[in-house]
Length: 181
Image (cartoon, rainbow, N blue to C red; front, side, top):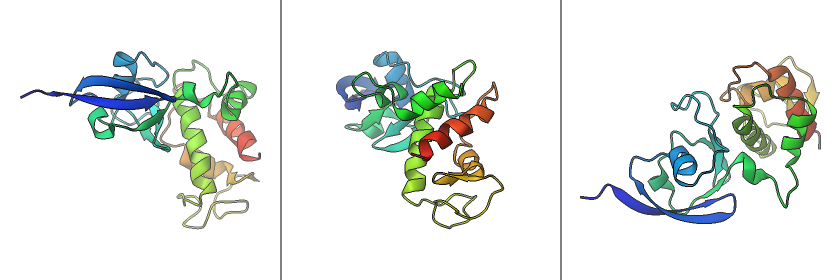
């Protein structure tokens, strides 16, 4: 009985057909099989968010997703957010606000921030909004309301992405810059 299967993954717009062991995580398929090192292996337990990618438009910890379960999936890494050589607005905002120190968590932070703003825009509630739709003036939190989410809501929605260097003071304003657009 073979433990290897063929899967097709569309990564950052490019289709890849590969044979993987059924236990191969999406993160390991990206890094070890495809050479895409944008998603980082941090904790390898889904606790730090360094491996965050968009999987069919939704953010996931790629260290917890098995590649075989996502045959045919569309995967976008932080590297794939840039279009035609132009950085994504979130990438530019992170640079402008110096929202990184060592940079290890930065790709996961950026991908998560892009997805988080889309979730808020779609009205997905957070613990801060207490079930109210997201948006200017949405409930709860002590932070100022800027753009579509409060600072407290940004912090809560980004809580699955950890930064060992504690660059949070610059990460929140970078996300808020994009949220105001």
